[in-house]
Length: 204
Image (tube, rainbow, N blue to C red; front, side, top):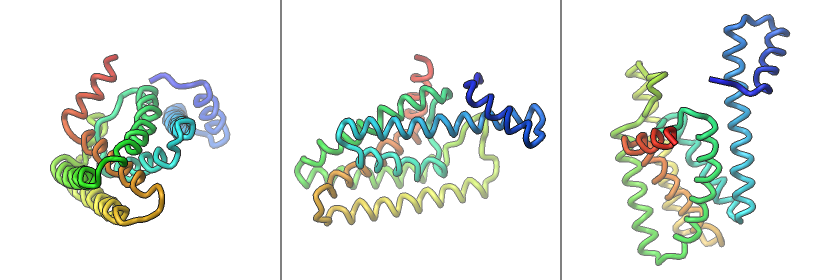
């Protein structure tokens, strides 16, 4: 993996201060690279959401996926740059879509909410945690613990989705649909089809 000069210089500087060997400096470079890209991705994603007028919806989508990602895993790009590009694009689009879906008849939005909750629980039970082949989860105990945490997170989000149905503040239904669409996107990424989509993105 090639790193940005910024990451290399920061790692080299910290390595000199703390007397780290070459191998540790490479590990530190990777950590700095990932943190930097994640921060930049979040800033760009929220900025695009703000420009499109869906800042809070975009933030809701980001937080929802982040709540699942660490415990349940899922398909992802091998390239941090491609992953970042998809992040910057997909979350504002989900927020925009939620704004449109929130104008549907209540029957349809309720049905979509129930479908997302059902798929979320079902696919977590079936697939989570989806680990990286390069860093597989070998411990059955850890695998069970991650699944339980993912199910707990899904329970909380489901409760919020149901609760927002009865909320009266102006943007409640739009935020509810952001949660619903985020759960659907996350659930899709747990499936083999979701993993194939990311493989296709990496092949472009």
